[in-house]
Image 1 (spheres, rainbow, N blue to C red):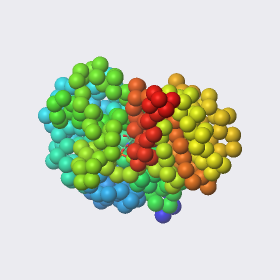
Image 2: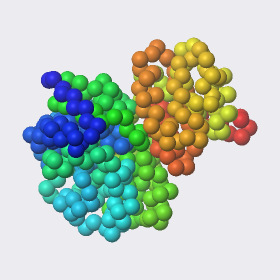
Image 3: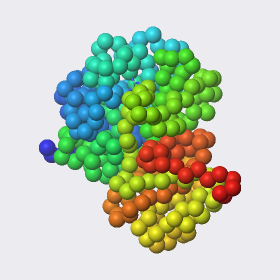
Length: 349
Ligand code: TXA
Ligand code: MG
């Protein structure tokens, strides 16, 4: 299959490309689409065979449900029912943006889209190109992250091409993703609402609107054998480079010293920018200053991908604290590490 690339910087001026991408989606095809979080692999979320093709292209297990991308809260009623007021309050405050809400699904959403669940994830992405495409297509676009299952999510068109060239009909290049980690997922069908995946919208901001929020166990720790997470995707190995990853948590000067002590020429290091020079001779991916979590979020998946082009045999990563975007970044790093974490305690520091 030849994958068409549509470069779109200005959806109004490049209307014919927007319409071409929308037409592929309407016709049951697959299109890589930019969002503010990560690139998605989009298809008509109401068309069963199109949705099946997503699972095939990604090599994704069929029980892992997809998020429906819609142009605004006024579409919620079409695909969900019993929608709590909190959903509208959150949409008003955070949409378009990196927030996915789990709601009770209507019958018109196919089983294959929701992985057989009675709920559906809904999100309005904050990207002018993709919003224009969804509006032109007039359909809810089901889109998981556009990576091959298990790989780090794509945060630019180059990543999307790396994973999907020749496998899908088109890729829309709308530039690099501004947020860089996937959306925050909140389940609004339970009381209190439950955080299923930390993401681009910090938990603190959600708590400011909703009050009490439970944090799903799968966010912070590996699941025990046979244990069932509430977001089915959380049980799969994810984001992992080929070389094994070890995450080191604690005060950043101390974690840098710990990694320095372990490092050889064959070590890959993910570090905060201020410690870069400490690792001369290693393969280094600096992800931004220790205090700049927005930059770390934008860089993290590209850094994880970059090691696969090298011959490193082990990767060590510095890790931000859990405040703000740190919770999502730390979650992605720990998942990439299969929860192989060295927590530096006071006496070791
Ligand atoms: O930022 C994002 O959310 C990106 C962009 C493309 O929008 N999408 C994304 O989709 O990350 P995906 O499929 O890679 O991750 C969605 C996660 C999976 O872990 C899935 O199991 C969970 O959301 N999920 C989807 N629908 C669900 C539902 N009804 N109940 C519980 N979890 C759900
Ligand atoms: Mg994904």
